Length: 287
Length: 277
Ligand SMILES: Nc1ncnc2c1ncn2[C@@H]1O[C@H](COP(=O)(O)OP(=O)(O)O)[C@@H](O)[C@H]1O
Ligand SMILES: Nc1ncnc2c1ncn2[C@@H]1O[C@H](COP(=O)(O)OP(=O)(O)O)[C@@H](O)[C@H]1O
Ligand SMILES: [Mg+2]
Ligand SMILES: [Mg+2]
Image: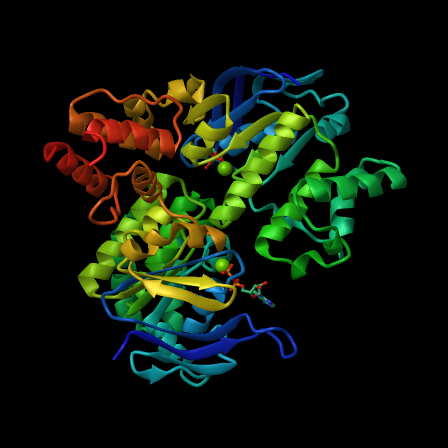
């Protein structure tokens, strides 16, 4: 599903002493099936933007289009429930929202809420548990007996079981150990490809933006500060530093290498092994 | 005397349940920064909670500045051990930033006259002095963590424990908090324990303790630790970018004299190779 923001403003607590404009004249277009990373320092408006995507909030002015759905000020969206079904949001620390007695019931909660037939629910619970790498023997357990990483997977399976077309992820790997981080991101990427989901990832990790996203949106003070493919955005380190962000570590290292050796060394999508070859060449080859 | 000493500590949350810590022994000295890493569920937070008497060992002993920790002296111990957790929202009790910092002081019996001085100077250390009367829950995540840290600094502990306290912050916020704590730690020669998944943070610590499945896997210095890339990956962990790169260089036949711990060290080594060519 395509997503379009047209001149969106969002103001919290309008006409009160706490009035705060969190989004300011924000416009962008994300084609269906794309993988977008949204970055910006704390308070730049990322979570506020996300809440527009499934109609949790409506713009104060401007409009948001998600597939066939339109969100406008003061107009209740038609088919609000359908929109929530099509846009699955994995909030920060989603495991804090688990509440059912068993893993199975927790995963089934979403589809049941949307009136999916019981036999279909059973099938989806199994499929989404498998998709997130949860052993089926855990389905009958209490989610609170599981490890942090497993609980996170249960919460994500619950979102997937609704079979959304758009997947919105707010810092999905925060607090996970390095292996857990990689497994969860690889899983999202696989689902994104297999099910042609439109995926939106809010992240502080420029590495993840570079590895998984094909498009990047940089926010600052509720405005669009930069937009483009990650590799292009990361050419502009100074501009990113001005809004308290930085480039991935490999870009930082390449810049220092260029300075040290007095030769431009540019990013060519390399992994560490390719980079090591390049460096070996620079340093004068093998001893 | 050690700032903190764990002597053969084992712990389980309930009888009949399996032990989540087995025979854990280590020391932290005054002025030392120890990083604790380990997969989710390996027992790191349990260790943190044992250090200030939120939990008590099932077996073994914990000694803080020479005093064996027990249920009678936990308030004395909590004056010496300050702790900040991952989620600042669960840590606030006051309706203003000032009250919140004051709360920890009152609890520890600090005289009223002294309280205001301590509150101001600790908030200054984390650059939050302008927020004295703000409501904690309206602050940004980074600001909340700074207030939580001020609350800890105000009680002048001899040991500070940060249990994934910077995990929710953006990279810059993370660096600011860590720099602040590190500065105070050096100036006042505190023991500092940071529990983290951030590999670059681990590289700055003096020593690192690796937990695996309730047991200490190793205690070593960061430079030695990262040599064991494959093993670390097997227990759910990883090594920083520079280490990965150094290992990839080895595969290219380039052996560095010393394991680099940051970009500069690696570039220095490459430059030396280049110049000696
Ligand atoms: N309920 C609220 N009332 C008033 N201001 C808010 C509220 N929620 C967020 N804000 C403000 O809106 C801005 C954007 O917040 P948010 O979208 O959460 O940013 P991010 O997710 O990028 O950290 C921040 O300045 C924040 O303080
Ligand atoms: N309150 C509790 N009751 C029972 N088991 C717990 C409790 N808290 C943690 N555990 C278990 O103890 C083990 C260690 O947990 P923890 O110390 O939180 O690990 P870490 O901080 O390394 O992720 C895990 O298996 C966890 O499930
Ligand atoms: Mg946010
Ligand atoms: Mg923990």
